[in-house]
Image 1 (tube, helix red, strand yellow):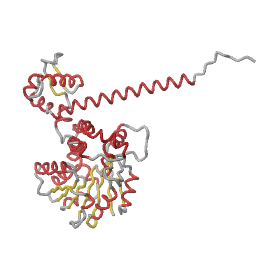
Image 2 (cartoon, helix red, strand yellow):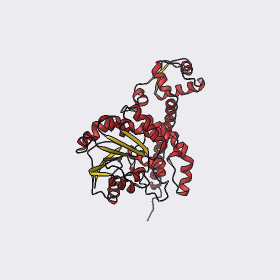
Image 3 (tube, one colour):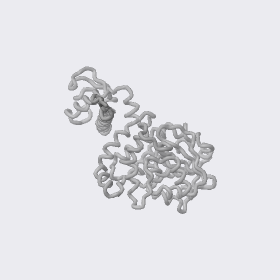
Length: 373
C-alpha cells in the first residue's frame, strides 16, 4: 500500500486566510471609528467656539478674518479650517489654507446651527468630551463596581442630552406622538395636569405647554444644572407661568400632591437606579383614569449579535454612560440602555400596572409604551 505524501492539509491555511480577512475588516472598522471620533472632536471645537455660526453669519471667510472676528488663535484656526475642508464640513475656494476663503458646506446649518431642526446632530459631538471627563472614574468602576455620577461627565453631558432630544420633541411630540396615544389629545386639550419625570432641560414639558394652553406641567429631575436650563428655556419660550421645574427625588412626587392625569418618562427610565420605585411613584401619583407614557430605547426584543448600527450605539452607550450613572446607589437595579419590552413589562408589573401597551409609533431609536393600573 502506498501513501500519497503530496496531499496538503488545507484546513489550517483556510482558517488563517479567514482570520486574516476578518482581522483586516476589523482594523478597517476600528480606523473608521477613530476617524469619526477625531472628526467629532473637531466639530465640538467648532461648536463650542462658535466657528460654524461665525462663518455662516459672515459668508466666505479667510482664516485671518475668522481670527479677527472671534478673537481666537490664528494658527489653530488654520489647522481647524483645513481639517473641516478636508472632512467636507466646509468648502474652500482654492488650495491655500492660509489665504483662501471658507464657507459652510451644504447641510451644516441644519445639522449644527439650528437646535430645533429635525436634522440637528450637534449633541453627538458633545458626548466625547463628556465621557472624557468621567473616563478615569469609569475605568476604576470596572474594578470596584461603583457608579459614576452624572456630574462626573461635566456640563457637556447636559449639553449632549439636551441637544440630542430637543429636535424630536420640537418636531414629533405634538405632531406624531400625542395623536398615536388613544385619547391623549383630548385629555391635554381639556387642561390636564402632567408630571414629566426625568425632564432634563425641559423641552418635552415645554412643547406640551406650547401646544396645549390649558395644560399645567411639573417637570422633575435630580440634576441642578438641567433644572436651571429647563427654567431658562421655559422663560424664553413664554410658558414659565404654566410649567414648573423642580429638583426632586422622582420617587417622592406623589407625596401629598394633586394627582396627575398624565405622567411621562421621556428617554430616562433605563437610567434610574430604582426603576420599579419610579414607576410605582408614577402610578401612585395618577388621578383616576390616568396613564403613564414611557419613551425609551428601541432595543431589539431579543438579543441579536452582532447587531445593526443602532443596537451597537445603544449597547455601547449602556457601557460608558447609562449603566455607570445608574449604579451610583449601592442597591441599584439600573437596567441600562438595552431596555427590551419584556423587561419593561416585568418592571411595570412589579410597580402595580395591569396593562402595558406598545404604542404604534415608528422611530429608529425609541419605543413608546402606555402603562395603566
